[in-house]
Amino acid sequence: MKLPGQDAIARQADERLVTHRVKLPRKAVERPIRQVGKRIAMALLVLLITVVIVYVDRDGYRDSSDTGVDLLDAAYYATVTLSTTGYGDITPVSDSARLTNILVITPLRVAFLIILVGTTLEVLTERTREEWRLSRWRSTLRDHTVVVGFGTKGRSAIQTVCATGLKKQQVVVVDPSSKVIEAATADGYAGVVGDATRSEVLLRAEVQRARQIIIATQRDDTAVLVALTARQLNRRAKIVAAVREEENAPLLKQSGADAVITSASAAGRLLGLSVLSPAAGMVMEDLIQQGTGLDLVERPVTKAEAGRNPREIDDLVVSVIRGHRVLGYDDPAVAELQLTDRLITIVRATPATRVTPDTRPLPQD
Image 1 (tube, one colour):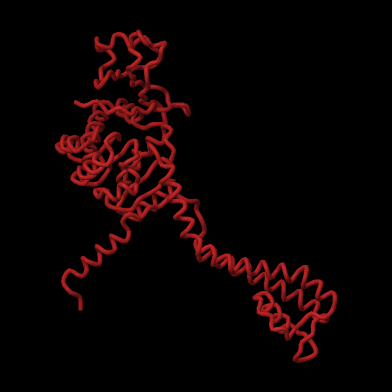
Image 2: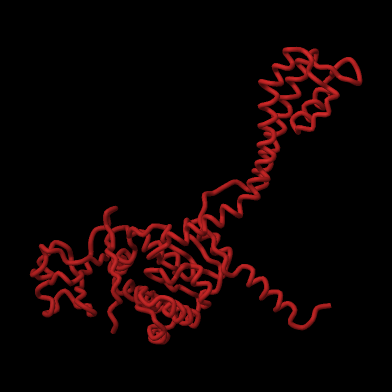
């Protein structure tokens, strides 16, 4: 008989068990059952080799219970010898048998013990090794990227950033689903299982030391809470968030997000552009897909470009960032470029193409 609310209490307990778990990416390994099976097969092979060696040299052994050593006696001797039990009822008496025990049987005994005891030691040391990896990971993690939500939006966002040079070791994924985190670690990212609206979960992801935070949750209200919590923990990080409804964008900016992307509206505008001009739609899709075709790149103005008009430089300039303003390339205010300006240009994607990071707050409307 279950008391009212018992199921809910059990679910909350389960959630507490999976919350705050940090998973680091690791190399693909065989399933544990297969590993154990291989080691058992190796141990049996060592045992079989020992039995054959003893049986071939059976004339050099003496059995205290009878005169001869048969195949069963050889198997018995091999078993008790490899397991270091050694009852002494069957012993090597000839010089050749004793020499074989020294040079062959003893190394096989050591190998047998390594195979069996090694499995136990590996299980016992796995937890210690994992704790050491976590401690080392936390001590070296600086200026990283935290991705909250690893669905279609989050996955695409981080793939785009990684295409411009960000290393996978500098990405931490936060998601309440353990299966999603397993998928993220399989892709080479570190993961934290938990609710990102809770500060202790974000602290597990070292969000207080992050350089940029990408919020790609499924619900707009969750995105608002995550932005509030993240901004409270880290005042300098660049926070970019996605929302479904355009009316929620101002609220998310008030919650601390530097930039807000309305996913539904953006997709709708791209659809409309593709209807008016399929070629223009293809160009826009190419521009937002980093690493192939044409890329939008933000970079600083070089000394050779200072004092020149944006139209006179080699790259195709789309906009100029001056202070907290984003100005068009044809704006009279940017008729002459300054060294403190930054340019948004369209370039052909190459392996050397990189987006120059900018730690300044994004321009506000």
